[in-house]
Image (tube, rainbow, N blue to C red; front, side, top):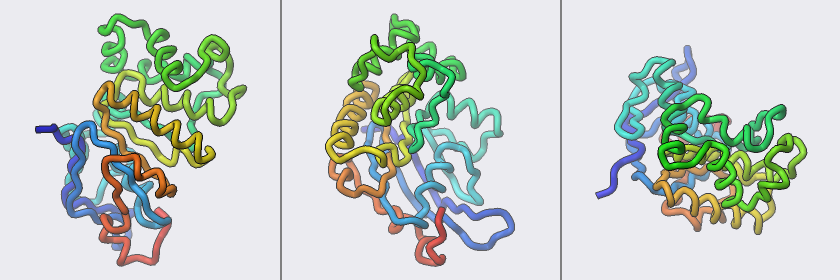
Length: 240
């Protein structure tokens, strides 16, 4: 029987001094290794949910368990450490560090997490070797770009560098927020296939948010967040 990666129970979120819930999810569960596609219009709660799972926001009430840990109970420092050790993020705008080289950007998570660093070192690889392996798996010509500033790369290359960074240290949960929005259809499909191939090697759970419903066919489960979020029907479609 598969272990559970994410468990949400009676989760509600509203901004301080507001009685209006922006997110209200009674129950949601994701298994370890499962690939979930979250789709929904503006205001359905996609960004809010990702920020809650990532520990950036605190819920107003309810439970949010990641890998058995109720992160709602953690203080700020412990939550930051848990996020650094167990999660990988692929951002829509990539959030690469412009003054670092390609390889330095990819190895960055290991500067903040001994757990991720030790996973790599204990496998017999150096951090640079693992960064180069991930980049090659994602179809990056490492020898041409590894020491170049990321600002010199194409959008597609930057996306793959950001993905390699998220995969560094085999995090148990990958959170991807609209990472393919700047790519054409054929490149998007190829990217998803490469992401899945790498995640399957480490049994990483994937939570992938996109407006492109066509991509959802590739995932284990397609979730319309407006149907999951009960608050969506009780508010004026506020952009969250």
